[in-house]
Length: 41
Image (tube, rainbow, N blue to C red; front, side):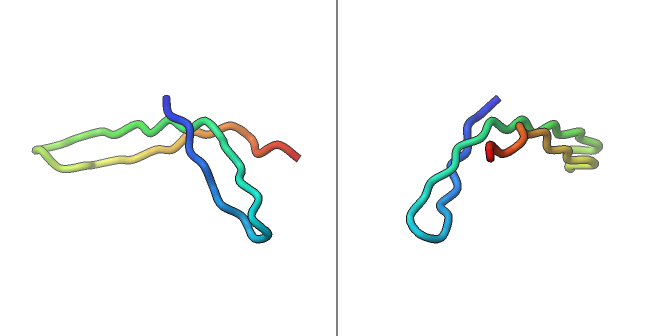
């Protein structure tokens, strides 16, 4: 799991947790799925 920071208009920065799941087949990415927390309001 990783944390990602997004710079928004007006100088605000939002941070959220992110997980990426990769499935490989023949040394190539066959599937990529992102899971992330809901953005705070």
